[in-house]
Length: 120
Image (cartoon, rainbow, N blue to C red; front, side, top):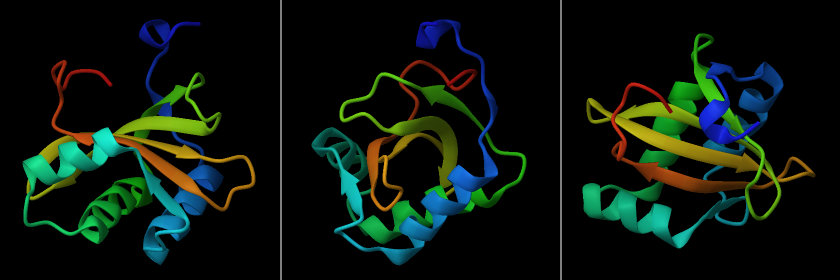
């Protein structure tokens, strides 16, 4: 099923807990960020620290009602979810991939919505 055909749904608790643990660690060896996600974050919030993005994403994932879109075609292969998170009262699009061994995440996206904020 293509991403455009997928529907937003609950993000599994185990995935959320694992990703939050890694985000909370603020460990640069466990949190990878693709260059575009880093540029997007820093161009929107030039004075924000990376840990503030990590904390905002983790806060969204701690909400039991959080929903996301499961993405299955990321490179490198990872268990990836797109989700909404909030920073400084602004709704942002995020995409986080959990690598297969469950010890490293990759932040693929962290930016203002580019296609509206109705759907992920």
